[in-house]
Image 1: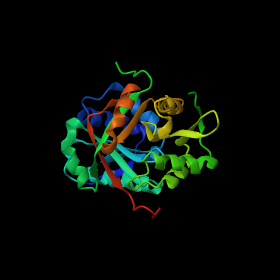
Image 2: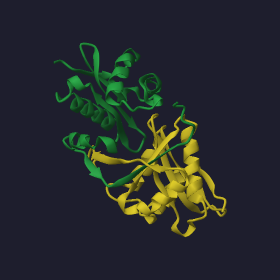
Image 3: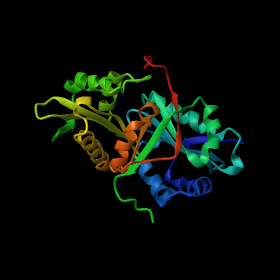
Image 4: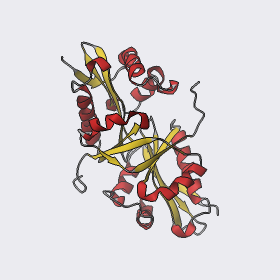
Amino acid sequence: MSVVIDVCSMNDLAGLDALWREAFPDDKSRHRADAAVPPKLAFQPDLFLVAREEGLVIGSIIAGYDGYRGHINRVAVLKAYRRQGVGVLLVREAEARLRALGCVKINLQIRAANLAVASFYRGLGYDVEEHVSMAKLVAADRSP
Amino acid sequence: MTACIRSATEEDEAAVVTLWRACGLAVGIGDPVRDFRAVRAKPTSDILAAFDPDGVLIGSIAMGHDSNRGWLHYVSVDPAQRNHGVGRDLVRAAEQWLAVRGVVDVHLTVRAANTDVVRFYEQIGYGAVPSIMMEKMLRGPGSA
């Protein structure tokens, strides 16, 4: 299997939509590919990566740098392509790009329903930090 | 008390860093001087400072975004000036700073040793997100 890690483009939209529907079936509409991809391609596009095999989108990662901490989101690999190191390639490439921007530390959040994935990140050098994560939508969510 | 809130300047560095230390926020790997300069230097992040009518610094907040999410850091109010709404006003100002940049999903993390402050955030509209947080240093402190 030859996997290419590359920056995302609008040509990946359909592939990302399929990938994310499989990986994140509970997504709100604002997280779906058609809503989420164009804004990210307009902002820090070098931190939005896909893995392709023969042109098929098989994996994704959206890294972000807020000027203080790096973040990684949307880490997904098609089920048929898991356990072959694709996720590791994606995370390592995102880390290298964040480091090049001057980022010192990456934080990531794992949903409570998805705790099994913590061992994947431990293997990549991430440690659990005892924190409470809090969030607020400061404008009306346009999701149905 | 009506606090005057504005973007922090280079001249505010010493007072803001002193406040962060007084509030116990300069812990772990954090280097508050480096953070103050780095956050102000980037277009995606900034620091706000709150002053009393005599021009004395009484509060501060750092915020940044990666287009997907906004993040609040270093939320701090002079311990002698608490319970007068300064923190609430700083968070609102940071939310507005993010909102005008198109970011409506605001996140923050509270250290396990500091969970008393969760109630404060709940009162101003934040909810705990059931999740675990993992983190990784991209390079050691001081090597930047």
